[in-house]
Length: 468
Ligand code: NAD
Image (cartoon, rainbow, N blue to C red):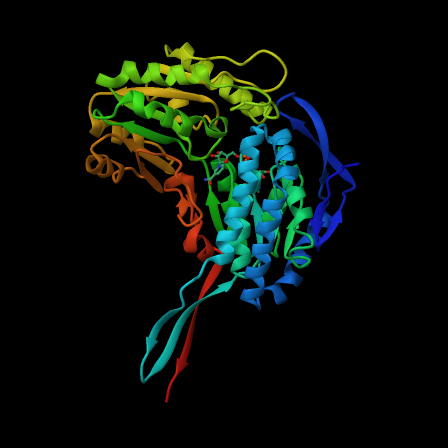
């Protein structure tokens, strides 16, 4: 029997079956999560549909409830963070930051003022464009930031007047189930339902007739399945998918100055960030120095169980992902790349991998062309910046990208030519609740955050009052 319960219609619910959750730092199962039955999915959907009728009516009540939800998170970081570390692997410090960030995002949406849009007010008519909630939102989250990425959906969906059924990844259901428990007394019953189960439960949610909107964060292959499942019912979708972000270092950059920041944005959450730097392009003149500066940093960081004091980077979150990163690094090495740092798994239990910097590598190698989503960074040499931009854009992904140099105008001009949703200069992964986040091409459809994120949970309605 699981210690964790789902939240359906405001109540704690166990399931007839459970599934095991592995602690990636040990490789051992450490908890059981409820495996939502078809009847329980029905109950979650109908409770969300029922709650929608009242919840959509009062914006001020919604803001108040969202603020209370944010406060509940701020007050519970000490309880939630260890649960997150044990299932996800990240350090306790990072887990605490994720819980606090989840609160920050909810607070932002609670306080976001959306402008009233009056498009005509004359002798003939008073015309407003207003945003109406859609109904029930099916929210599906991945395993890298289970709480934070849920808040990117929950905050705007609830502010707009929708109700939500949320499913976390089967690899990391526990902190999200706790979030459901935490908010039971804070949000009215049925407004926020949390169910857990395997991938099949996600597919059942997207095929279900009740949700009018699917908000999905995860991989490109699953995103395509979600889009296909949404099509017959013309459900609205927001898809936040994978990335293969390039960082282009310009000739006037100082490797000693930028290496730590490049490393931080590539290895954050152990490289398991959709818009982490996944490949770095470096001009010939700086190549040796940049590889060495990145490698020195990689050799200096502390990897270990996220619960241990001083650990900066935990394990890779799950076994298939660990095997994938191991395979991509081995493939690069077998094709002539050099491991300037790391290059192999770390012996012992758990899914630990050495922070790895790969040099003497180019496009056409799998780890450059594909999303590695792990602690291994290829550093690619270039001679002509136009060619570097073409190679950065030569991918079906388009999530983020960055350009690094001392001439800011020049760097911004190059960044503007990157085909991606976020183009950064001398930084990467600069994310905030008020900035729209989304991808070009296969990296997604729609955006999250800011007013744009709220609009994604609404239908546009013209209210036309004729005069005279
Ligand atoms: P995934 O696609 O395997 O799973 C994501 C979620 O979808 C899980 O909850 C899973 O159970 C569910 N799911 C699986 N099959 C489904 C189906 N057929 N229908 C509906 N739901 C289904 O992704 P993952 O491995 O958990 O996450 C890693 C990926 O997520 C990476 O590619 C990463 O780049 C991406 N990601 C993107 C963003 C972003 O905002 N763009 C953020 C974080 C992660």
